[in-house]
Length: 83
Image (tube, rainbow, N blue to C red; front, top):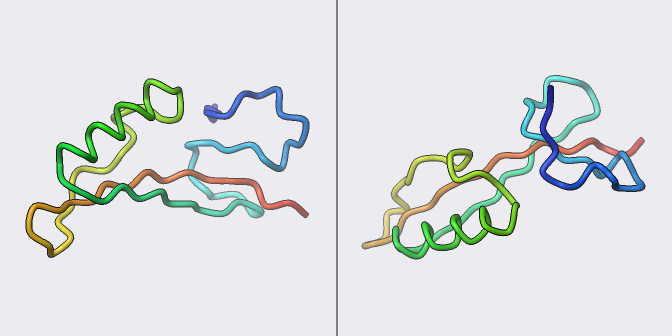
């Protein structure tokens, strides 16, 4: 069953966001990037977790950006496309 990280009490079901794959028609993949030092990215990810935005484990592993002391981590979500 999909897990919505936005409260299910939204008045517009087209705005529901889930962590379930976008296998169904009418869904679109959204990626959220955090780019910076490993320490800075971890702090932001943990703050977003504290706010109920996303579980820490849902973010990708750190990936190099090609810049010294800089990494990026990605969070993927799926949204329903309004018809």
